[in-house]
Length: 272
Ligand SMILES: Cc1cc2nc3c(=O)[nH]c(=O)nc-3n(C[C@H](O)[C@H](O)[C@H](O)COP(=O)(O)OP(=O)(O)OC[C@H]3O[C@@H](n4cnc5c(N)ncnc54)[C@H](O)[C@@H]3O)c2cc1C
Image (cartoon, rainbow, N blue to C red; front, side, top):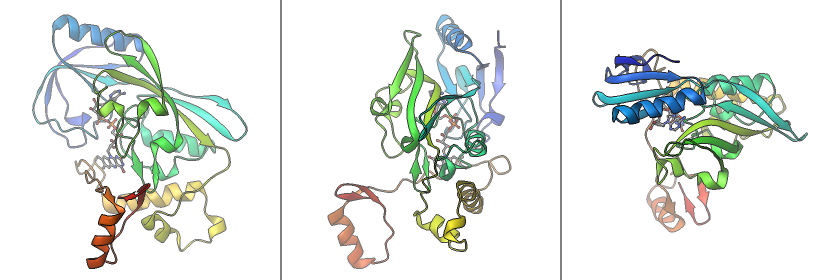
């Protein structure tokens, strides 16, 4: 049974290092602990808040309820069809450590997403993305606990309705499910995605045939370190800029005044 800690300072649990106090804090490491924590907040009639790595929250004041830290751990290979390997990771796993684990075992596809802070469980919520790859590109399915019924539900990619830094969990299903694990569909033969301009530039000094997923991970990590401070040393919330999505016609109009404008294909008829 995990400890329910009263008057808990969340300063070490958010990358902005906001010293907000939670009435109660618990770290859950099993589905049973998670269910009990939800029950605890119901019985006490206090709100609850799910917390992963705290890299995408702003604690603007104290939290008058129970903070449930997701400490579910574990990684396992679910299946291997020769072309793809399906790897399941529990929600509390650290994202970057999971990326490194996959690289070590030669399960490819996550390399561009190296060094993004936070947990595996939060990654689908905003469909994390960086350097030309988004979580949805390597996603197979996820398991989540229905907060109301306490039942475990499986979500396919379609059910997650991934968008640009978006998913169903940021919209109509917000706060209705706790993600407990995510299964990834990873390549056995690397399919490198290195056309993102900053990455492509940084890789120019390498012979094309020598570029491996490990090198991509290293180069992405290096670029990231030049752009943003490590939250462990300088508290920060990362970049919260989102590219605007505009119609092709709008891009063409912008190009008349700014021919060098940087843009990326988005979907048919629009760019970001
Ligand atoms: C320096 C820095 C760089 C960053 N770079 C990037 C980047 O390149 N690309 C990018 O996409 N993002 C980036 N981010 C944002 C952030 O890292 C991601 O959004 C990450 O997925 C958040 O994970 P977390 O575990 O810290 O979530 P938290 O901050 O703990 O939680 C975020 C939200 O998700 C909810 N939540 C957390 N876990 C669960 C769960 N298991 N089930 C249900 N709800 C849950 C929380 O209640 C909260 O509402 C960056 C952030 C920082 C600080």
